[in-house]
Length: 209
Image (cartoon, helix red, strand yellow):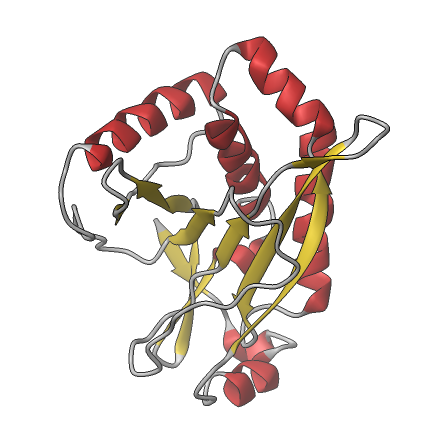
């Protein structure tokens, strides 16, 4: 389900009109996320850490209004629920795009996520299903890289306003604290630093709970 933002009474209308006309309206930042408690909790639950932090990511995404906005021509759609399109790697070195539906109940989410991951792993090709709505985030994990910055391949002729969130390699310091880099790219017509900061704060709190 979606509604449309009342642009005439939206304080960021001028910002939206300015940034949406740019060839590259996306901007982003990379931050370090402490994942010590989250990793231990996922192992205690006997679940995939990837699925665990994807769920936390979507929990935070769905709590920040700007991350639920999508550009539709001259309008901004506001979706009531955002799902995850994660890249899923295969044993042959290729990967496919998934659609993992968000559910606040982790048990339900984990069951659906594992089923979708299995499906993509056993289905050849990049696009293994249709993506009819843009109410999702583009999600990826690069467990081989402890990166400090990240860019994305983009076609400027393809209309896109979905946030792009990527995670890197987990590293552990001498004190036993584990962390991993998180890169977040958002459409500047929809989100500024304050919104990105709110998302990072929300996600951090969930990972440390």
